[in-house]
Length: 358
Image 1 (cartoon, one colour):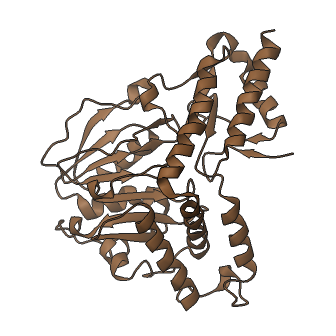
Image 2 (image 1 turned 120 degrees about the vertical axis):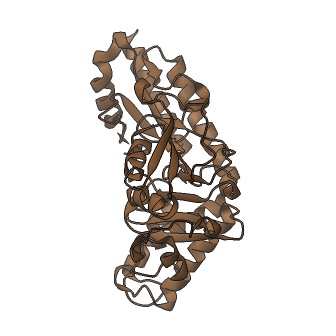
Image 3 (image 1 turned 30 degrees about the vertical axis):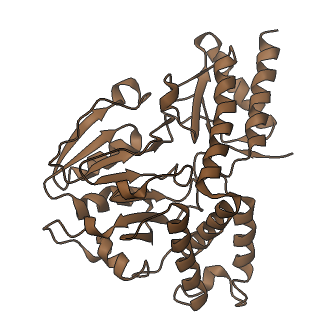
């Protein structure tokens, strides 16, 4: 039976990435050594790291003056590193979900934090629009996609202060203007690689403006100067990331990927809105995520939620459970998820509706 992987993260990866990484685990670049045991300073792996950085820049059209870093610690480590390197007196944060809220709390250890707007009171079911970013803020932090609640900021924000974005779950899903950002970061385990590597795109001119001393390991300049080799990088995930970037380039890059993602999400949202059993968690279609589609049973059919989940599992659909704080269902439709999996889910929803409401 074909399996359909809807897990939110770690999540589905291209078969190209899985196959090439599996082969490298046996024999990496003809060395006769496993990728797991090769030196990160070997010419073979240095070439991997360099090519991955270059493809980042090519696919996202990253301008001069920016660096691509591959670090450890997950995106959560950046909740600390960003203010350590950027916050001198005041920072502004937009609170649109659990991870945005966690980032905001960490920043408070380093200075004043202004929460410019929050959708927390409404269970994060919309993206706040009418807010003002203080012009004296050292930076403005946003989380572009919220995996738990299913909202997404899909347009680049015009901002008078340095813009910082956590793009863990929607990086490479659409074109973007990197020049509008001072820092973009994320965990790779959604649209890029297995868990273990954290990517950071940082504008060099944005650094060096705080007066505090920064521990060596937490200083972005350390990793820029050492080209992500200050300490041993997560070798296997970096190699896997390169394979995903090659796959993405072969498909036509982020413009082609955005078109595919819009089509996939549209198929599923259309069925959720049509089907009498289900309803979307996010009422405003403009705020709905293309990466994490969250939905529940309508109130009068709530008792059937576990039954549909079991039915979907019996058809090979995995990872559809909604986050424990939300309930219902969450279909993560990341870049590597084929349209066929979305169609299979829609067919299951139609069949379940016909069975229950016949």
